[in-house]
Amino acid sequence: MTTKLTRDAKLLRKSEVPGAAEVQVGDPFSHVDTFAHVDSFAHVDTWVFDLDNTLYPPDCDLWPKIDQRITQFMIALFGLDGMSARALQKYYYQQYGTTLRGLMDDHGVGAAEFLAYVHDIDRSSLVPNLPLAAAIAALPGRKLILTNGSRDHALLTAEALGLGASFEEIFDIMDAELIPKPELRTYQRFFDKHGVDPQTAAMFEDIERNLVVPHQRGMKTVLIVPEAGRPDHREPFEIPGTLTLPHIDVVTTDLGGFLADLTAARGV
Ligand SMILES: [Mg+2]
Image 1 (cartoon, rainbow, N blue to C red):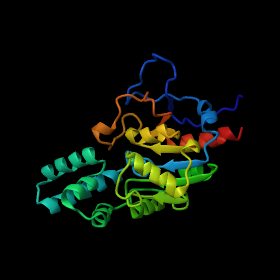
Image 2 (tube, helix red, strand yellow):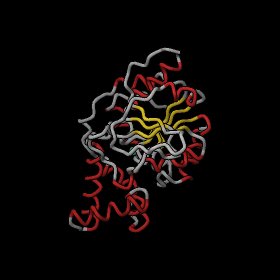
Image 3 (cartoon, rainbow, N blue to C red):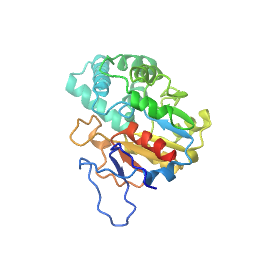
Image 4 (cartoon, rainbow, N blue to C red):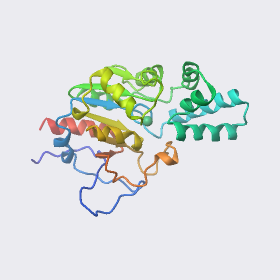
């Protein structure tokens, strides 16, 4: 097999060599042959995507805008100064999985009100990602979004990215009965609602802990990371110290490139 993949998908394959040196986040990504992954994705007929920082570049300013809206919501709710509100926000995010969960459990905040407020942002910085749309369209099988955000946010964001027709279904935080990933029951609810067999599905995410359950259930797992040196809006605790984690099959900086190369390689 000599077909050459011309695009530099900047893949980093999980080392399967015992004792191999770990690759630290931030190291330059080296090109790894996509053919190495083709066989292991050959059975996949359901493609499941996170939304924020996965379908748009992690150095896009969209997430910081949502993050700021959450801070503003908490300033108004508690009458706190900005720094105190932000500290409480991050505490809830880390302890409960989403800030909303903490606000609901501890303060009875209404989910609909919170979600509408924090997702009321300017999305004009997003531009259509036509290569990604084409790559997703070419995948065989079903494509779904599984997000800790709201359905309206997912619809508006996908539309702005030129991905408005790319997905069959969106499973949002309300579908999850406000229990966010990485809770096992949320994935199970998602599998049940949409008839997804995790053994023939793949999950794409920017937060590694959200790939633990998918891996346990037999999904192929792909972690999307920023290119070295680019802004990274994940929280420090969300950034793994190593990319050789057992629940991650593939690490890539280029979701569209990876998918396009998978499709091209399948067609060989
Ligand atoms: Mg995300």
